[in-house]
Length: 244
Image (cartoon, rainbow, N blue to C red; front, side, top):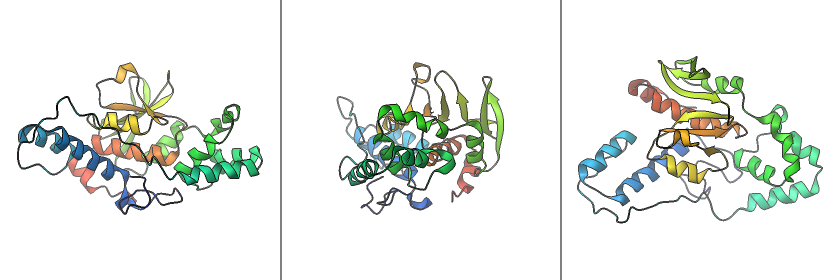
């Protein structure tokens, strides 16, 4: 997914995204299919799960993994040269220059992975400089404008985004976060893979929703909002959507 040396990776070596054909959505769906197959079961049970994901069926029963197989995806657990490069850069430049890179009004196109690495190089007290980069309602609406037939609405008294009356994103408080839909089977993989961005509260346990931190890079927010829209939109409308 983010191992740039693999042809199917969604990212280039410098941390920028590749084209829509290399979306992390398909990488995650592939991992979800692998999970269903490895856990095993009857053909009917497995194919029902795969159908919900829009993935190819299996042709027969498979042994059930006992005890239930637990799978953890480790996002590029080695070759973190870009982190070391950013740490060196920070040591050589003034902090206020780093802060200007992280502020949304002056953000350069380093890519979300490089920006995250850059923030990790700052002393904890300096992270207040990132407050200007938090996602607001206007940012969320701007992302939604890239999606067909979105509408501004409300959900449980909160500003929300919908497609043909179906919820796909909202802003909430306590904790401050973006609420999006997600695949329930895929949810544990996502939360484990991106704990710096994604989380849930007890209220969302067992439900196909997750929370995105408001200081997440806008590119990552766009990715999860797009995925949420695809889950909420009617199948025919979703099939017609071609993200740029």
